[in-house]
Length: 230
Length: 269
Image (cartoon, rainbow over all chains, first blue to last red; front, side):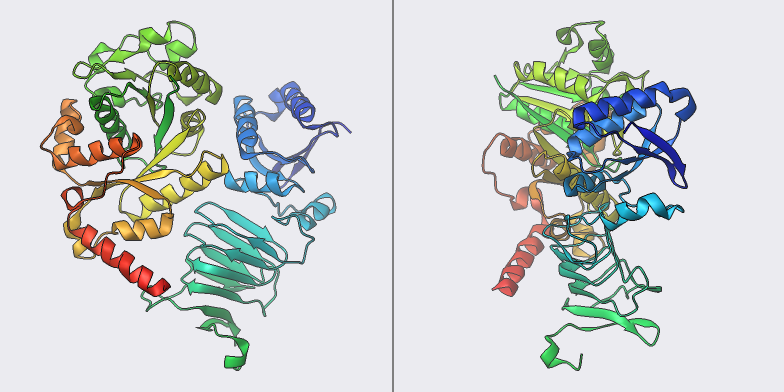
């Protein structure tokens, strides 16, 4: 299979060929160079399949593309390492393209920790400003979610730490999704189609759980199930 | 010699990267280290002005990379400190004039002759920033006690960690203890709680910095200045000394910091 380029809503989706990485990268750059007059200024989404790419090499690739007048906008990959590298550089790792056929499979497989779709992912780190986690299933973070970070999950989101960024639980329409955190102070909280902005002045942080009740996002103290009516 | 390449960066502009680079460089040189400061802010060079060496520039980093001169020729020796040198940025070009690889090559050469290579990074997270961090062994992040500066610092820390440059060190610049005491400014503890990285310096807001910057004499060289002392402390910490954060460079907010730490550890217990 050779390098393939096709237009999608977000820009140009470029699939690399089936060679090993350094060769595949060279072929990619050569192909783009051949078509540079035609491609100039384009936004690229690279489909890197299962290749493991570190943030450093991805940075170099982005620089080389920008030398050719191309801007790297997103990266799709089955490799968790590649996906993390892309996220760290602020690249999109998921496209909401209008063409479901080829991307469907990719989206299914884009869990940050290489687990099958629908399951939970566990992230043991602080999510800093600019990081973006998107997953079909549940997301658990052991660490803080700082302002400027974003989690979009099809299922529930549990933060064992301070939540101060943006979380969207039940993003595919699940109204019964919940968001829990040891300190629930998000910039903004979304559950399915509901958006909530928490009050600015808050008392001492305590574990809380947020869910939708009567069409509104509400937060309650997060205690063991036996201790509440939950 | 195997010098350490340290990049000073911040994400946000105007927090004091260039001033910090000049002062840490001068302070390191004043304790006998061989230091070269490299201005990576091509197109908007400033470091030469702050160091008071603008009028001696003949060649710059782009001339070196493009082979118009030797590295030695672009290097300007400071007029006060024998061990302090500057490689200026070009003023007429832009960030694309050099690549991360060029920076690595230049720094590898400098490592042989210097203890410290300090790189003054441009603001932002684009090409210029990539150039500045590519050769770095260590990263110093400068921030101000201000929500937007801290937010950008957080983003930068995330990128630096992803590029596997090790845990960065933090300098909190322009703390105003009166404002902190009144609760109108983020305190050191608030910044550290969010960023969760090692602190290597706290610098008070001080109008004397502005004066020294305009004059091209780093304040770190003024023995009686408290702010100068704060930069000298950073230099000593970089050189491996254990220097406590004292009231002399701390002021009122440190009381609050230690109180908070005590409160925190009580809570944890």
